[in-house]
Image (cartoon, rainbow, N blue to C red; front, side):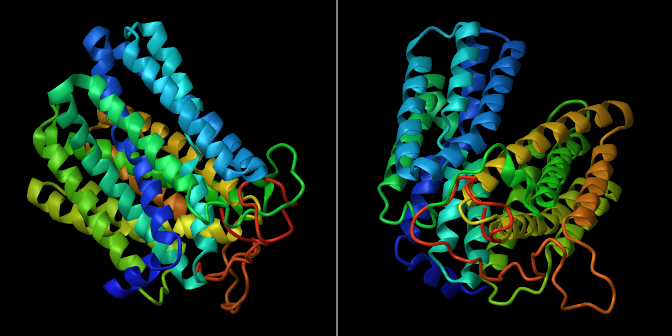
Length: 423
């Protein structure tokens, strides 16, 4: 693995600032859910928390693509700053007022609706600031950072709650969102890649050739990953969740972190998205056949090494497929699709564990990953190795996206056929 690859990437003007501040602004993703659970259970029940969690997710699913489009149409700085302030107000209200069930549900919805579109914005901006071959480095590094967030976040939340209760943990979440988002918006190139084009009505970005198959791929992949989590927990714990389950999941995350770093550092990348997804499916298939905690742990690490490369390649492919001016909105839709896949995978795995045991969700996850590999790319006819697939994307995700003029990047404001570029 070449450290120089990452050093060169982070030395690109504005890139390190935008990347690091975006991670700070999104660090709450690994904290808020647990903090909300602690706050709700202190006064209410798990049923109330289910409602609180559900409406918050619905709010985020609805607002993600809409705020991403608005950010490209009206300016990223404006939308990011406004949503960061509104999110802080909602979080402050949640902390200060009594945790009544109806109020918790309402404020959770507000938090979801006011979530700054930071993920979609940074994924649309940074590839416009770097060389085409550095796109893989960015998406791999970002996927790796996400692993760190979801591993370290709950630990920080538990530590803060131990000292000051769930209110302190929630205050930290709100502070991270506000500081990180405003710092990102203050970046010199926060508006890079926005394109002044006429707005497109409705959900035109969903009809862009090549994007629907990527959204379906993302949903299937996250559904598989969610099913794998519950399957591993059930496989190790049986009827009662044990601490070993958390350790094994952390081993898988460590493997993903290592795999992401290696993938992003490679100058040349021959593996296509389909092949990477097949690696994910193969690992899940082996997990479904494995017994014994030590064997599961070793296999989880090596299987985890395939996850971040597959996700980063999916995001990179989305980046070069989305039309100019619609990259952030496309990433906004992808975020919603991934969340839906996560919920569906968890639900499916729960039903399978109850009816058929711990290996069933792992087998289902393998099938879902295979389906993702099946639909992710058009199938080329034999004898046309160099041909461009029907959706206009190429075998190499590193193909340079056509960079838009000066300023616009995430509103669905371009005719779908105009260009292929980034999410």
